[in-house]
Amino acid sequence: MRTQDTTLVIVDMQPSFAASALVLPDVMDEVKLALKNDWAIIILEYSNQGHTYPCILELAKQSRRHKVMTKFTDGGEREIRIACQKLDFPTGRFRVCGVNTHACVSQTVSGIAKTYTHCVVLVVQNACAHTLRQNNWRKFFRFKSFRVVPAV
Image (cartoon, rainbow, N blue to C red; front, side, top):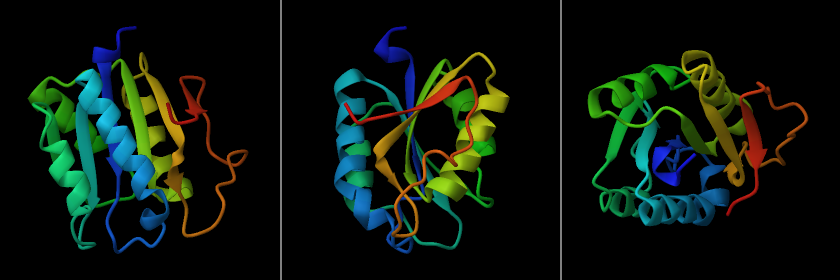
């Protein structure tokens, strides 16, 4: 699969989530990777939690294919589906990062895998954090269509 077929999903990288500070540099690296490879970028923001870090937003604006979406539940699959349909973003391969790993990231990844049964979802291990504690990847809900990967 070509790298152009990827959509980067950034989950809840808002300063109000304490764990977001732990992975901010790694998430920025993911945005840079997306820009380098001309990937689509979807930034999910949890409603009433403020905006995504300005440095992420400013960098993502350099992409010709980016969208910020507000979500009202832990999982952001509905917002991802809407963005992909409206903007013709690719749905064959997703790369996901953000917080909180065992809540919003997990729910979002599960929703993507259920919505797009043909897709592959890569969860970027170094760019995910969970409420200032270590991620327990063994407990991370897994589908055969997604896997945890180290940052590139």
